[in-house]
Image (cartoon, rainbow, N blue to C red):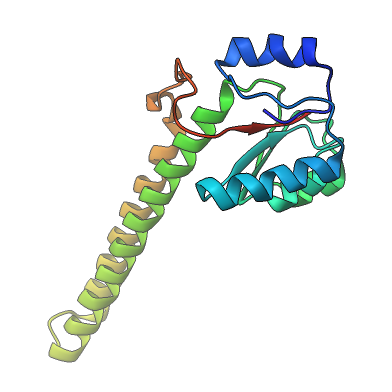
Length: 174
């Protein structure tokens, strides 16, 4: 955990999150340097912060997560993910929702390309009349819309936080 806060405050937060490696009272430049060092040692780095003093470090991270609506404009511009509440437990949900969105987008691309192939093949062979072609096109469009609407059932996404920070290096700032 990288923070500009005092040791006592940082230790309390880190203890609740299961984070054992804590660096406190860091200036924004020091946070950026630490992010670069973590990236050199461990690879891809995600950083979570409020953006008030962490904008340079957020820009340095591979994935930047800004928490709270009070984030600065610079931090919100830099962010890959913006959590509108100061609730770190929402991060796993946001990641799961993004993964589910990506899967559904890929499925919709496949459905769309399949529709194009079917329509081109039918047009070249004369298998469909124009009316039938329009009908098939509309059926595919409705399938794609229905598939996309599955995202509205986001309650199927797990809303839990891992019980340990054993997933690897973590950079949290405030």
